[in-house]
Every structure is written in C-alpha cells, then in structure tokens.
Length: 290
Ligand code: NAP
Image (tube, rainbow, N blue to C red; front, side):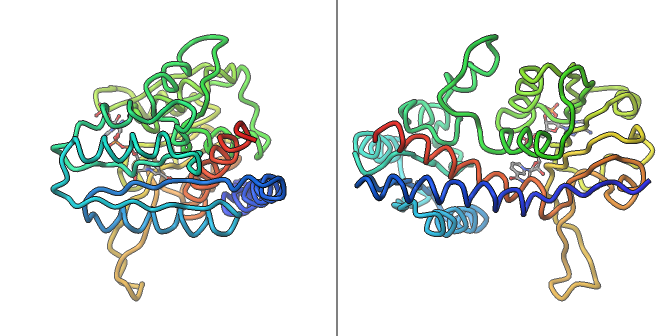
C-alpha cells in the first residue's frame, strides 16, 4: 500500500484564501484586521517564524504590528508592552513568540493577553476550556487546530477511532489529545515514560507524533491504513543537500508511507497549517469587533 499524502501546503493555501476573502470584507466595511507580534531577544528561529507570520498576514490583508524587545528586557517591560497592545483598538490579536528568555515568567505574560485577543490560544482559560465537556474557548491553539483540520480535510473518521498522541506538551500534544476526545476519538497519550509505545501505536487508527525526535515512529509500528499526522520538525545531516542539512519529522516517512492509509510529509504537512490557523483566529478576533 502507498499512503495518500495529506498536502498541508495546499490545505493551508485554501484556508488563507478564505481568510483573505474575510479580511477584504472587513476592510470594505472600514475595519482593518490587525495582529501584533511580540518578539523578545534574538533567537534566530523566533525571528524567522515571526517574519513568516508577518509575510502571510500581508498576503491575506491582515495588518501586522511588530514589537521587539531586547534579550535583557525585564518582566515589567514585557508585561507593559502586552498591556499596551491589549488596549490598542487597531490590534485584534496578540502573538507572543515563544520561547521567551528564561528570566521571563511565560505564564504571567500569556495571562496578560486578553482572552479576546488570544489568537495563539495559549491563555490558560482557552486551554482549560478544551478540557471541559460542552465548553468552547474563544480560540483553539494553532498547531493542534491545524492537526484536526488536516484529519477532517483528509476524510479521516475521528469518531470512534482509536488515536495515539505521542507527546504531552502544553502547546501541541495535550491540546491535540483533548481536541481528539472532543471529536469522539478514544485517545492514548504516550510520553517519555510510556513503556509500550510501539504496541500502542500498532492498534491506532490515527497517530499524531509530536515529540521532536527524528524518524522515531517506525514503519512496523503502524497499523495498515492508519492516518499519520507528523508534527515533528527535526534537522538532520544530509550530505546530498547543498546546506548539508535536511528537515525530517518524528515519523520514518519512507517506511510509514508503505503501510499507512494517509500521511503528512515534513516539510509541507502540519507546518503551513500553524500559520493558516493563526490568520484564521486573527480574522475571527477582528470580526467580533465589526
Ligand atoms: P516538547 O515540549 O519538547 O515536548 C515533547 C514531548 O515528547 C514531551 O511530552 C515528551 O514527554 C515527549 N517525548 C519525548 N521523548 C519521547 C519518547 N521517547 N516517547 C514518547 N514521547 C516522548 O515539544 P513540542 O513543543 O510539543 O514539539 C514537539 C515537536 O513538534 C518538535 O519537533 C517541534 O519542533 C514540533 N512542532 C512543530 C510545529 C509546527 O508548526 N510544525 C509547531 C510546534 C511544534 P515528557 O512529557 O515525558 O517529557
């Protein structure tokens, strides 16, 4: 069997196109959707991610307002900035790029983002709502939301499916697991202390891998026909590339593609969805002000 490739790039482009239409309608009515980005310090990867988010904002007609603080900014500096953006009427969404420098209390900063502008979905109340039956938060975190959207748009039946989520982080694994429960899947969460991960995976109709270990999930862990969503992004050496490096996921793609029913590639799977869902959340936040 050769798995269907779930094209995250194409699906994300469709979502961005819908967001673009929504943004144009708001603009026509005199409201310019706005996203404020907050970057503290000089981590090159964070700079790259924020740059990508801002480029995509421009593409869909969302205004981005960039705010940068030095690596030695104090907790008070960061909070003061977020509090200013919280009351700025041009700003409908606030994105605080993580990770913050170690001396900054991340939870306090995320708590300072008002719920109505929490387009990253990381406010503890938004995360908490995911764990409560019948409750809906204001915003769903972007990468986990992207995972669910890929499952839906690839035609994967979640209701009644047995799903394994590898990883239990606050930003990916745990919210993905909660969202899968909400879709009526039966969910097992594997983490670094799980003893029988391969065995658990072999029974899964859906595997979401979010651990950050290159090609960790082997082909023989996969149930024939299962859907595999690979969130992992790992840089490995590759002498055949000009850069000498290559990006791979948490799943051994070459082996998995022969067994799975559907699978996301890395790159081009979950990655593009994260930004698309951020843009969708920003449009949603702006629409509420129309
Ligand atoms: P993280 O905070 O480092 O969490 C990793 C999780 O994996 C932890 O829960 C850890 O378990 C678990 N784990 C580690 N070794 C394991 C093992 N041998 N078996 C099972 N579980 C194991 O990572 P993250 O932020 O969730 O990110 C995970 C991956 O997704 C990374 O590669 C990251 O780059 C990628 N990512 C991609 C996107 C995107 O847009 N494409 C967005 C976010 C993250 P413990 O809890 O027991 O330590």
